[in-house]
Every structure is written in structure tokens, then in C-alpha cells.
Image 1 (cartoon, rainbow, N blue to C red):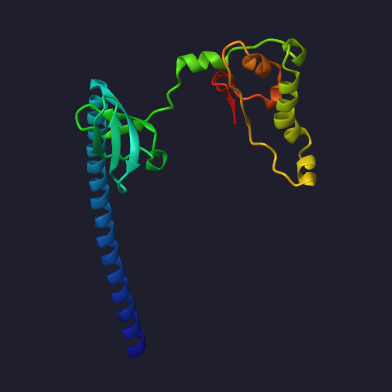
Image 2 (image 1 turned 45 degrees about the horizontal axis):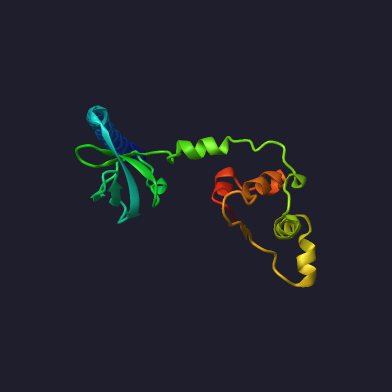
Length: 207
């Protein structure tokens, strides 16, 4: 009997200890919940402050390089270079060299990454349609057309010929000469699948 009573007392003691530990943990959980509520309020206030700063205006800059995990060297649109921090919500992996960013007017903190700038002139050039032109529209350049087709079309259509001969196919061609020598006309006459973009053709090179 004494043995059963001792075991019962031991079990009750363990139960009381577990119950006391549960109460302590429950108290800590409640304290942490209250702490989270306070931090959430601080977070919301910070977000509101950041939005207020953004509404003041921002500076456009360009990332030059990353110094460490938190700091970047940026070049402002006005010319000066700065060592700046980054907003916590911005994905730092996207802030590669050359990335356009918006900088806070006051602190120069990087607020967000911006899309790549598109020159409207280049954009309009991309929309240009040269129309239906073929090689017969180009007069007096038979030899040049043959050389260009061998350098551009042949490596794409029959690459095995270059392997068989043991030479590397050309990587590109450079068209040069004064205006009116047929460079843009040849680009328009080339098969569409071999053409560079129109801005590249306007630069008169193919690489």
C-alpha cells in the first residue's frame, strides 16, 4: 500500500510541475503576442512614413556596384555618386550593376528597382516595317550579295559544310560605306529569320 501511495504522490508531483510549466509557457506566449502587436504597429507606422517620403519625390539613379550586403554605390541622374542603403523590401539580388533605381529625395535610400529605360526613338525604329523587298531589288551588288549570303545565311542553313571543311563559320558581317550604297535595302531583302533588329541595322553592323 505504501508503495502505491508513493507512486501516486510522485505522479501528482510530476503533474503539478507540468501544469506549472504549462502556465509559464502560456504566459510567455501571451507576452510575445502583445510584443508582436506592438511591432506590427511600429511596422505599419514605418511603412506610412516611407510612403510619405515617396510622395515627396524621388531621384533616378543607377547602381554602379555593391559594396556589401547593405550598401551600394549609385550614380544619381544629376551626376554625383553616393554610398547608400537599401529599403528592406527591395530584392537586393536584382540590384545588379547598371540597374536603374529610385532614390529617396532626403536619405538617398534605394526605394525600388525601375524597369530598363527605353529610348522612344529606338522604340519607334523597332516598329518600322521595311516592306516587301528581295535581292532582285538591289542592283549592281551581285558579288556583295553572294558574299553576304555565304557569311550569314549559309552558316545557319548548312552548318555541316563548315564542319566538313574544318573552318569556323563567320560570327557576323560589317556593312560600311557612304549613304545610298544599299545597306538598309540588303537588310530588308534578307530572310526575316536572319535579320538583326532594325536599330542594329541602322547602326550598319551585324554581329
